[in-house]
Amino acid sequence: MNRMLMMPVLLPFATAILMLLFQRKIVLHRILGVLSTTLLGVTALILLHGVMREGTLALQIGGWDAPFGITFVADTLAAIMVAITAIIGFTTALYSIGTINTEREHYFYHPLMQLLLMGINGAFLTGDIFNLYVWFEVMLISSFVLLVLGSRPQQLEGAIKYVTLNLLSSAIFLAAVGILYGMTGTLNMADLAIRIPLLEHRELLTVVAVLFLITFGVKSAIFPLFFWLPASYHTPPIAISAMFAGLLTKVGVYAIIRFFTTIFTSTDATLVHQLLLWSGGFTMVVGVLGAVAQYDVRKLLSFHIVSQIGYMIFSIAIQSPLAIAAGLFYMLHNIVAKTNLFYMSGLMRRIGGSYDLRKIGGIYDSYPLFGLLFLVPALGLAGIPPLSGFWAKLLVIRSGLEAGEWWLVAIALGVSMLTLFSMIKIWNEGFWKQHPQSDYDFATSTYHHLGRLDKSMIITPIVLLGLVTAVFGLWFEPFFTMADHAAQELLDPANYIESVRGGTL
Amino acid sequence: MTFLLAIIIGVLYAAGIYLLLRRSMVKVIFGLIFLGHAANLMIFTVGRLTKGSPAFVPEGASQVLEPFADPLPQALILTAIVIGFGVQAFTIVLFKRTYLTLGTEDLDNMTSTDQLPGGKS
Image 1 (tube, each protein chain N blue to C red):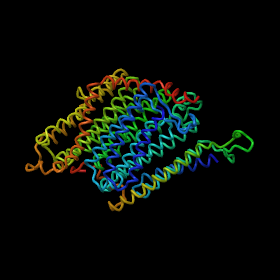
Image 2: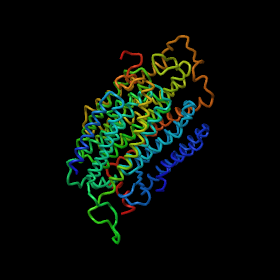
Image 3: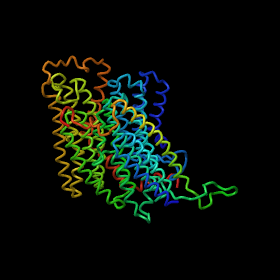
Image 4: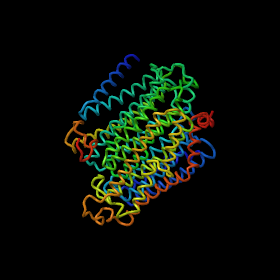
């Protein structure tokens, strides 16, 4: 079972190499992409099942015992994240077939997507902070190339901001890792969790914690470090945007959860937890205010990513078991709903002819079913029962009330209203009103001219993720139990430490 | 030695951040490179400096004799240099390409992705 831990990393890696060997065979790339992500899904489910049954799994790479070698660890949180990554990877592989043009595909689009998945999975599974840095870089460099693939002026301009700020955060990460190593003499997360409470010289601890907060704050786009996100996420083709929107920022959130529960407990870094709390509040407000001002669907959704991250950060900062569980469930719900909305925005452009809400309209008249497909993730995101967002927000608000953070709860509720408002804005402008060109013929749209296969490749991911959102909402209990279990593990790292060191010491 | 390195690291950080705040893309690249170097030297320094005693097991002995230089920070730096090299190479190509496409290297002119499309800026 423990060897399964490597599979989520090896599988995309092997697929990428295989694709590069058959460089010119685009059809093969597509098939391999779908096949590999399907297998990834199966592996992730086996892993999740194993973790639920046997508890946290650990694998010492190369047989070097912890804390000397690199450890791969899957606790419930990591296993859940890998599973959701597989789902998004699979749907994006399908969506790419329908939407990415052949020129991009010739320039290694599919192998890069696999390498991105590898980096993301590696970041979730590693139990070593320097190794985490390496996976972040794997993920970043793949995302850089995907972002500029095609080199349109907008993409390049967005990429400059994305690349510069992310490299800056990597440099800070590296320095923080170095200082922490100098203080504790270890890089293993479990070992750090043991040694940090015992440190004699604690002066630098807050500094290091804040450096990590800045690093992961940039990656997860929290206030006031999010500016690169709305400047770049809307520039690449929609399949790439959707993948980034769903997963990349959440890797940052995952790292924040991992660092500020397992490694730095709230007694070690009180300042950071205070900062997180208020940053969460500001992130929600600023993100949603940015969103309501936008008319470009992709930019509107990009600002929403920021706003939603605020909810997760807020609940992580509260640090009660319920709050962490709420944050995790929120993250799962958000990854699915957000990716789906991006897919939908691509479909809206193909039907209506533009991403600009002022230039499209009337989709509901011509394609009423797509209206329904849009409403599932949109109302889910806004938090309308019985969809997943309702439960996610209910949990966040409840844990906020229990912690006595009245102001932040009020902010969260207000932001929720504005989220609903901006979703209704997309609905009114894109689906409900007449198309601004009164003679616009939907039979001339790019969507109408797509082949049957391409059409189904665009619709299937939207339907699948819509179903997931509905399932999260209607069968909420098992998912919450899982998130709750993960939260318990995070707040009591003894189990994690035991699994990492148990087999060897 | 530690004192000297600390000064150098400080200067590199200061220069890196200063360059990063400039409007010219070339300076931004140099800023990023400086920050990378500063971080590498910092790992080296906070990992404790031990002069002239590498972590080799002497002949006849079964383990390394104290004091010995910790090899791990060196391994970290090596990895970080390699990664940094790759990423910087990519960044330079990206900046060059951006310059050729947009015809400007002034970062203040690159605001189109931040503006509301069609609205007033």
